[in-house]
Image 1: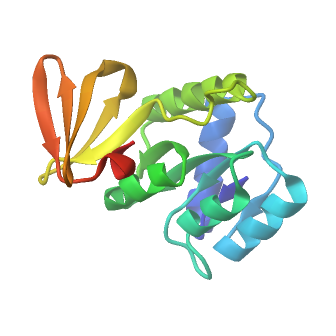
Image 2 (image 1 turned 90 degrees about the vertical axis):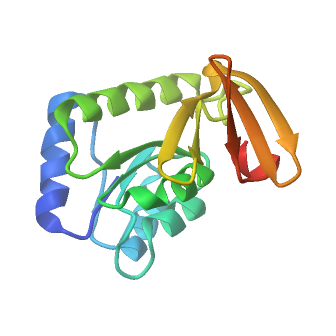
Length: 173
């Protein structure tokens, strides 16, 4: 499922996906969040590529509604929604314009998620998004040496260094 309110961008994403993943079948296209929800209910896609800002309801709303059976990749012009996107269990978050190599790595991530489907730990993220106050950082879970809760803060230890994040443990993980 591809949900993008701008038809030219939707067609461009479809074409780039055909190049990056020729065997992928696009079962539906939607121009707004409501159409995306209807298509998801009818077609039950394995993967949804969603824009964040769409008419009627947002891509975040769509992701929450379609459930865990569908792997979501957000494709958006807005980097500031990444934390919310990963809270909605996104497999990946692509910022427009999407470079071909970035799309290829996203395709690999989705393929891996599909291969893990049904595995007992498949619903846990492989990366977490945290803000250090200046910028958003994506941290691979396997790189974490230690995670310490400190009140309303969490300290993440990576490579022998600590990163203090102003979030609770429940929000970070």
